[in-house]
Structure formats: structure tokens, C-alpha cells
Image 1 (tube, rainbow over the protein chains, first blue to last red):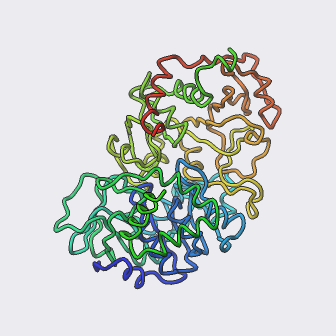
Image 2 (cartoon, each protein chain N blue to C red):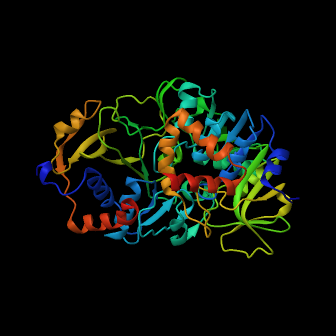
Image 3 (tube, chains in turn red, brown):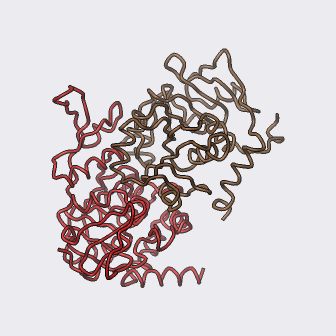
Length: 284
Length: 239
């Protein structure tokens, strides 16, 4: 049953060194506040899972939190490379990073299998590509038609983490707009944390909205603005300029470290982080 | 026409030529960048009923301006339906409901196979690229794959460093110099853009490029196409 706790407490209690951790949110509702708190608390050797490890994982990888990355597309959307991810893969900085890469369809099937308590997901995929020898995927034969299909092991993260628009006071959560794989990751994970823009007396059900009942979640934490620089539908827009700026910030190791030092390690929570960024913009 | 006389960019020519191949009712899976520009141009001009699907889960998106990410809020607000990512890939893509899928890549080979994973050796990469994304299953699930890629010997290679997706369903490659289509199992130059030549395309291809006997010329963008193209970009790209 979900406990309403400060994010710091949720991370202290639920995310341990070496855990497999999935932060999801497909372009929308990306749990950046959680990424920052993991860096502040110095979690190490995490096996990170995420379909699109964009800026949120570039920061965790560059800050030395990750030993492994399971993913399907690792870029800065609409901008270019993730420089910290590339530096880890190409030069082992700040430490080597083991990769397990899939396609989007494979990752989605693996999450759906995890949520369904099945050992593997099945799809018509990977065929003819060089991915199978480089990832964990096998061929299986349909017992009914004889068709050869791809099997991928279910994702069962130790901790699944998402950001949502609202929770009520009992810890029931609702998110809407582009809902990605958030339902699947919460249901597939042994433990789960949800950060929210707002806590309301009662959830008003939205068309196309995803509701996660309180009893599927371990901790709900208030983190207004916690998806920045991604967006929260109905609350704030995507900070497109930040995605462009990140290309420059992250290109250079020292500049990246200075940014993390100032805006993440030098701040206490998401509101402090927002103030720190705003102050830097005024000064610039 | 000399380049100096040209009133449009190479990217605009590519977007226009890809857009012309989409029709009312064509259901297309769109990536960000040039494919998104092409599909939205088709919708703004000759194919208002072209159905745009972005892999974030938005089906029938009708953005007024070009989105900057595949998951922009405007895509969800204007879509006929918004579905989850597992549903998108299982029911809609694997379900065989999509006509045209756009792909880009760092490398393409003579058979339309694509690499968006790595340049150099996998374990010691020269350049680590973003990876597969939706490409492997888009390439085998849609009816026609449209590839959009600028011509260069580094991109058009005899042998890929890594096969991220297979080329069986590639029906056209739109480059900044012209159009390649599969003929007898190999990509063949079938048309050149105004101002470009077959020799230029040969020089920019890392294999012995076949040129069709009936090599054609694409038509330059019309004023209406350019106006629609630029209107799509004004607000966002100008900002």
C-alpha cells in the first residue's frame, strides 16, 4: 500500500545499491526528480532499464551510478547524441557500462510480460538483424502454427519508477496524455515509486488516463516540476531549449561535473533544483 | 538549374519528394525530423487524410506546427487516439495496420539494410549511435519502408558495420541528390533532383551504384509546397 513520503525517504528505503531500476516515461512525464535524488544519495552499481535513456540516464551514467544499461534507443531526442552515455561506452568513463540493447517492440513486450507475471515476452522481431548475438533474445516456435518468433526475457526490475500528474491522499495515482509503458513498469517491478505534480482530495477520472491503485505502489512522493526538462500534460510544457543546451553541458566531462555539482548535488530537492536553474539563467 | 538559382534547400527537396509519395488514407509511422516534415507536408497539401502515427502512441495526430519530439503534447491533443507503447508496437505495428514506415540511419547498404547502432567494432566502437528504437520491427511490419538519408560515401556503404534493420521492404530511398529504388534486388538510382547528376550520386555512393536506363528527373518544389513546408516550421524552428 502506498505511503505518502518525501522523495528522499522513498529513495532511502526502496532503492538499494546494485538494484535493477527502471525509470519510465516515453518523452512525457520523465521522472527527472528521482534521477537527481539517486545522484544526491550516491546510489552505485545500478542496472538501469529504460526504453529511451535520454537526459535522465545521461546524468545518472555520467555521475557514476550505473554498471549496466538495458535500453532500445539512447539519444537526445531531436538534438543528437547522449555524450555521457557515449563516453561510458566508447571510453569507459567514469566507469565501463555493460549494454543490453533491444528494439522498442522487444522492450515493450518484456515489460508487458513482467506485468503479466510471465517469464518471457513474444514478438515477431529481431529477425535478420545483428541484435540477437548482442542481446538476450531467443527464437521460439509457435506450438500451434510452427511460426518462428522472438522471445525476450520479462523485465522484472527491483524498482519501477514513474512520474504522474496526480495522486489522491490514499496514494491512488492517475496519469494521462501519452502514457507510454508506465502501467507496465509499475506492475512488473518488485517495488515501485511514483512522484506526482499534485496531491488532490479526489482523482477525477480522465479519458485515456491510466489509474494505478494505491495497493500497486510502495511510495508516492510530491515532486512538482519533477519531470523537467520533459513535460507534464496539463501542467507545463517541454523545455526544448534545455534539451539543446544539454548537448553543450554534457559534451565536456568537467562542464558536466560542474553542472551536476551545482544543480543536483548542490540542491536539496526538486524545488531547490528549479530555483538553482532559474538563478543560472538570470546570471547568463 | 544552377545551385545559385535554387530557392529551396536540399532538406526541403527531400521532404517534398517523400511527401509526394504519401496519399489520402496512407497510414504512416513517422519519426522526428525530415520524416515528420514530409508527412505533415503531405497532410497540409495533397493528402489531408494521410494518417500520422508517432511511436509515442499517438494515432491520427494533426499538429499545426512541426513537433520537436515524437511525444510532444500537441500530438496527443490532436490525435484520434492515444495508446500505450506496448499496444502501439503489438496491435498497430505488428498487427500489420501501417502502410508506410519512415526510417533514417547512419549507414545503408545496396540492399536497403540499415545501421543505426554502431560505427566500428561493437565492443570497441568508434561511434556509439542511439541504437535500434523501433526500426527492426518497423522494417518488417509495414508495407513500404521509406528511407530518408543524405548521400555520402560514409553513409552509402557496401557493407554495414552492424545490421539494425533489414531492407526487404524498402521501396524508396530519398536522398539530397535523387531517388533510389530497388531493381532486381539492388538499390538503383531512378531519378535525380534538379541540379544534381548521376555522376554526383555515383561519387557520393560507397558502392558501384547502378543507374536506371530510364533515369528520370524529380520536379522542383512548387510554390505551394514550399509555402506549406515553411508554414509548418515557422513558429517552432524560428523560435
